[in-house]
Image 1 (cartoon, rainbow, N blue to C red):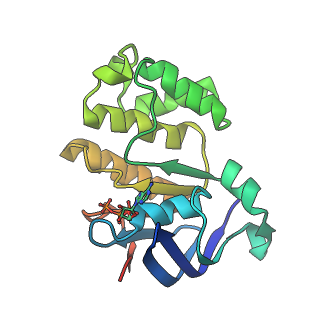
Image 2: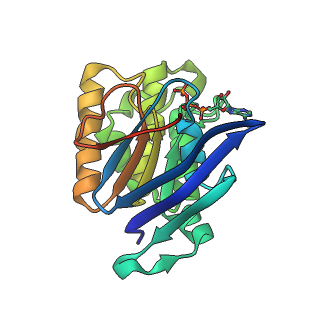
Length: 205
Ligand SMILES: Nc1ncnc2c1ncn2[C@@H]1O[C@H](COP(=O)(O)OP(=O)(O)OP(=O)(O)O)[C@@H](O)[C@H]1O
C-alpha cells in the first residue's frame, strides 16, 4: 500500500519551454494537495509526470509504502494510483456500464465493486446509455466511479469537479473525505477550491 509520494527538484518542459523547475512536494497518507496556477502553468503536466506519462527534465518522483519502504515506481504506478484526466478517458461508443466494468476490471476491481460505485454516484439510470450520449457532468461521474470501483491510494485528479452540479460536487466532497480518512492521498489540479481541506501548491513561474 502506497503511503507517501516524494517529489524533489522537479523540472518539466514542453518542447523548448520550461514549465517549472525545482518543485518539491511531499504527499503523505491522508493528505490532499490542490495544485493551483494559471492556464498552461503545468498542473496537468505534473499529474502526468507523477503517473509516469511524462518524463521530467530533472528531479525525482518517489513512492513509499509503510514505514518508509521504497516502492518500485513501475509497480506503484501500475497498481497504486488512479489518474482521472479532464478528458475522462472513456470510449464513447460503449455504454456507461460496459465502460465502467471494463475499466474496473482492468484496474483490479470486481463487478460487485463497480455496482457499489454505481450506487454511490447515482449512475443507475445512465448505465445503458452510450457514453457519447451522456452530458459532460454525467460522463465525469462515470469517470469518477472508477476511483471507487477499484480502490487505490493515490488519486491524481485533473479538475475533477468542473462539470459537476452543486449536488454532485457535494457528493464528491464526501467521497474525497472518505478516501482521505481511509489513508488515501489526493493530488488535484483545480481552478475552484477542493471541497475538502487541502494544502495549496502554486505551479509555474
Ligand atoms: N502534448 C503536448 N505537447 C506539447 N505541449 C503541450 C502538450 N500538452 C500540453 N502542452 C503545453 O504545456 C503547457 C502546460 O500545459 P498543462 O496542460 O500542463 O497546463 P495546466 O496548468 O494544466 O493548464 P490549465 O489550467 O489550462 O488546464 C501548455 O503551454 C501546453 O500548451
